[in-house]
Image (tube, rainbow, N blue to C red; front, side, top):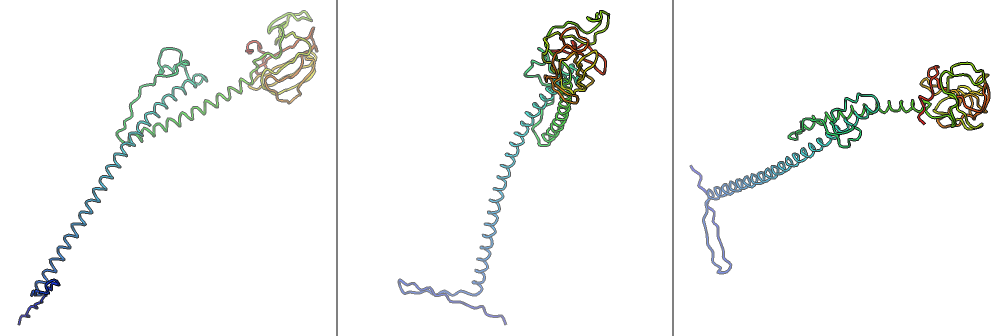
Length: 304
């Protein structure tokens, strides 16, 4: 036997007229209405959720587009900076070549790429050699160019370090080259064959005779180490200085010494005083330069 559906009465009372109305509603209707309401709420909830997801995705998309635009701008700026750095490295390469030529480490022909229009040393805005332009279309190209610039910069750094070491050695050699007059006076005898002023015989004079006032200062023409400061028969009071790089100098006929054996001296230091000792006819300084033991004409080394 089929179960009879329940019927529910709903009474609506109005407070104003004290009247009431009664409605009869079946249980089936209430269940159907509840299902309909739940379904409507579910659909509304899904719609709202989908709307919120759509809004969120749209916001994320706009943010992503803004990020892409910003990254493109940064890549473009980076590309321009790489271009500027590339031009700077090219100028550094040219200036490095000039330094190498000036230091005698490279042929002057290497500077032909700089262009014409005057001596290279007076060019302040060199013409750069033609190079392929840098593309700023992608970060990959910029990264590759940046790696190339990094390699070039390391090469330039190593080259300049080498140049500096060479120049330092040249400075040491120049400081050790006897290039100034040891005293001021008049040349009475030069390097070469002559008639000896005392014996009257022809002989070879291995240095310069500089006539000056008795007691005048004698200075070191270059940095060096005093090998001896002693009296000898021909030279009289003699000082020998070893300057390194094969250079030695001799100072004869001195009145007295201002240095001792083993002492280090610098260019311009007073080492003794002009005298008239040994085989000498008047106050003067006998000055010799020897290179690896062989006498050389001192006038070939003097620049002051």
